[in-house]
Amino acid sequence: MESRIELLPEKILIGKSMRMSLAQNRTPVLWRGFMMEKGQIKDQIGSDLYSIQVYDGLQYFETFSPTTEFTKWAATEVRKIENIPNGFSSIALKSGLYAVFIHKGTSADFPRTFQYIFTQWLPKSGYELDDRPHFELLGERYRNNDPSSEEEVWIPIRKKA
Image 1 (cartoon, rainbow, N blue to C red):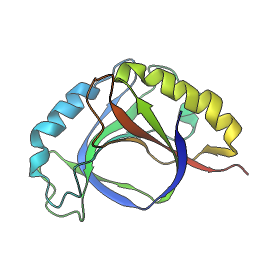
Image 2 (image 1 turned 90 degrees about the horizontal axis):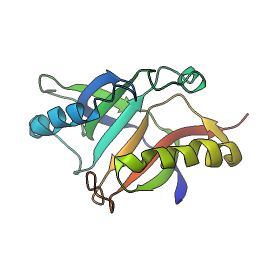
Image 3 (image 1 turned 60 degrees about the vertical axis):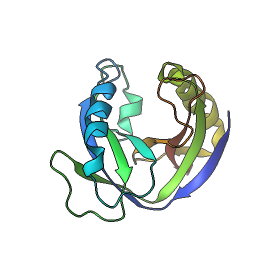
Image 4 (image 1 turned 90 degrees about the vertical axis):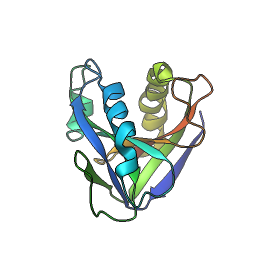
């Protein structure tokens, strides 16, 4: 699987968020609501979309179960935060190191990608997870539920002590 290490500059995004778990996945509801009203967001940078996961600290991964909740965002990058439309909120992605992977396929194929990242790549990498949001960058090669779809998976990392 393709991967690279990137230093992400701080990004400001506007979007919608929901609490959910893998067992009670409400991602389609979140994205439908976001996409229907995305045109109201001013000062968008480009057309890329961000699917962001904010976990409640690193202990999330130590005590993970399919019912453990996290906050999921559907968002787009903006130049500045002014006039946030009703029903939307802002989130900042702080600058830091990320391991970036290319996921190819549908969302049903995601478990295979995450298993590789967390059970193979990360333990051998010399890095450990950092406590910042994880996200998928849905760019020009993203095709919702198409087997030829590609998206970037960004995992926050720091050098192991």
